[in-house]
Image (cartoon, rainbow, N blue to C red; front, side, top):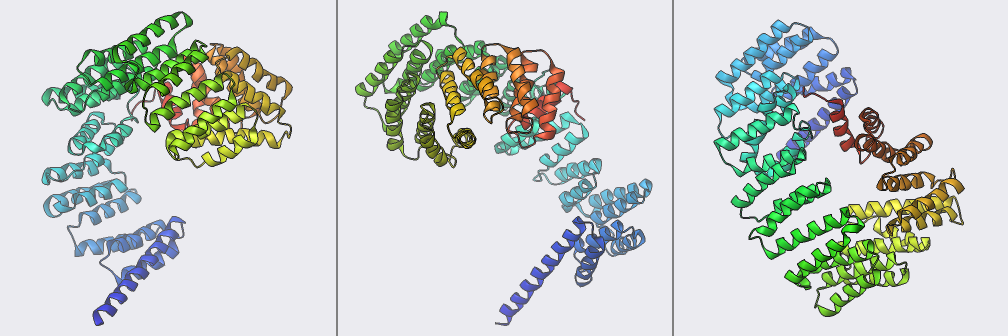
Length: 595
């Protein structure tokens, strides 16, 4: 029982001390150093062995410019423990505050000497103390010595960050690579850090240093890690064929299959490099890859061709699809290809009825799983919306919802129910579905639902007849049907007949994106500028800044104007989804050097 009460007393004592220390810290953060000092002094008097209490007292005296008292406390403690390297750094920092760099450096040197001779087990805490006062050279030295003294110590992350701040690029990259050799699961974190230095330009200093280091390491030790990093680097530089060389090397040495090559092709397609993507995927078709992988390669190639084809190429694409079907059959194994083919027939070639018959025949002919059947029904419904047969489409979307319940595809079907109801002017039912989807487990669907919900609610409150909203929904439908010119004209009705209403900025944005699609870049620019001029404080301002900047860079050849717009997002729209991208592109346009 006595032990129990002793335990309770100790627990309460520690809890009270912890609360007091936190209160002292709060006072210090608020600049109330007299109050902080009073608490720290009481804690230190009761526990003179606690270095954090001592440092709290010292810092409070320093901030109150009571330098003699701070110095006496440090010196007295150092007399008691002369080889405590951390305290020597603190005294050195004290002299830095007094603008006495010679005295400060002498104590920093003594701290390093104390570490070497007496304190070798405390490399991390000593280096952290140096870092606290931005003494990077000394911190790096201690981390380096710590790893030499203890082969099991791993300070590569800390060293890499210091080297980066010092502009020692090769040492920084080298430390990160050493970390990855020990802990490969850190790869995503490391690559995010690399993004602060690596640019799209292959002649950028950091890119050159990193590439040379990787090649040097690869020659000394053919570790697959270096192939992976080189592939990653070339992808950042959009040199997909060079990345492909390393992905092939990984594929030949790794047992995990050609997924990396497939992923590389997808990235190349996203960057509109169809030629490189086709070459990459043809390699899959020529190897002994599995049937599934080859079908995936065919699917990606054909979809990319569809997305980038003109009408003259449609006949060739039909032939290519049928060639694949002849080789692999129209079975459960090729459902993805068949759904894509039906989409191509309906949305590109305007053969809607043929596409629906093709898909219905697939459902009737094959014994499909619930998920496979739902994928096919979703596409049938999409084509029915395209054909403005809304009620039939709603039946199919609802069947998918009921078949899969909480699956992602069911949530997508619910969103399409809302979108279809919106197209047909049933805004109340659309809003009901969207309210459910705002908490969707899919962030993409939740965001889309929120956006459409706001469009409906904002423009129903202002106009009870929903006249402008009906025109806007009609324009959105025409855009979905790929009737671009008609959609542009319909958005224009809002801009002329409903000038100044809430929906105007949305119409400007939607129309601008269609102008871009039609390569009418000057008209798109005018729309973006109008959003900035008239709606600069509203929710679409960052969209207008970003897409106008992209237009200036990629189509209008005015990078200086783009730089100004990226800068506005960085300083005025820190919560924008375009913030990270804008910061990187701004740095590239400004030609930032690595410090």
